[in-house]
Every structure is written in C-alpha cells, then in structure tokens.
Amino acid sequence: MTEHYLLIKTIHLASVSASFLLYTLRGIWMLNESAWCDTFWARRLPHINDTVLLTAGILLTMILHQYPGTHAWLTAKLVGLLVHIGLGFVAFRGVLSRRVRTIAWLGSLLAFGYVVTVALTRNPLPWIS
Picture 1 (cartoon, rainbow, N blue to C red):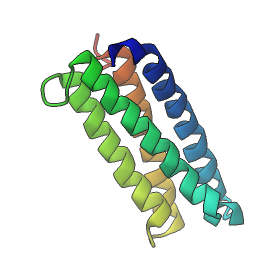
Picture 2 (cartoon, rainbow, N blue to C red; picture 1 turned 180 degrees about the horizontal axis):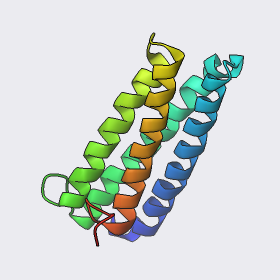
Picture 3 (spheres, one colour; picture 1 turned 90 degrees about the vertical axis):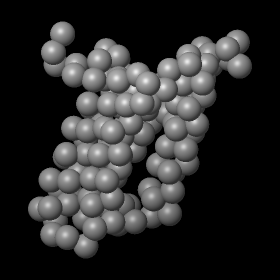
Picture 4 (cartoon, rainbow, N blue to C red; picture 1 turned 30 degrees about the vertical axis):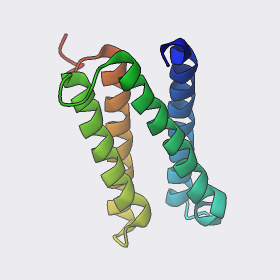
C-alpha cells in the first residue's frame, strides 16, 4: 500500500478542496434560500466526496502508522472534524432559525479551517509555534 502513498495523498487533498467548495456553495445557497440547496446532487455529492475523503484519510493513517489517540495532531484533527460535522448538521438539517443556522455554518467553516491548519502544521495548537 505504501507504493500508492502519493496517489492516496493526492486524492485526499483533492477531496478536501472539493469538500470545502461544495460545503461553501451549499451554505451560500442556504443563506440565499435557493432551491439549489435542496436538489438531489447538492445533498448527495458532498456525502460521496466526503466518503472518498475519509477513506483516503484512513488509508494514509495506515500507511504512515500515525493514529488518533496516539498522535496529538491527528486526535485534534478528528475532534475538529466532529465539531465541523455537528455544526454542519445544525446548519443544514436543523429546524432552528436562519440566524442560528448561519452561525452554525460559519462555525463549521472555522472548524474546517482548524482541521486543515492542524493537518498542515501537524500541531494541535497551530497558532502557538
């Protein structure tokens, strides 16, 4: 599997980019109350992409022998991902007010940014060098 490291990492990084773009676009549609937000592909494509992203991430942890719970930066990345997912659930599936959904969406984008920053720095507290 190590011979496929570069391919798996490229797939992972491409999926991260696609995930951010799809999530941001869907959030903008939500804010504008666009009918596009509720289309089949707007709801399904991000889940397909995120499955590819998660699969590639798991394969990378196996190749590198770095695991959440053992390596602090991966643990922080996983916690950040769970926060991102939870806030995304509130933003897109919640029956709460538009204001609460907007705040949840923005918080989710911040959590996404945190996860990316932790991944790039391999530091669970990336703002502290």
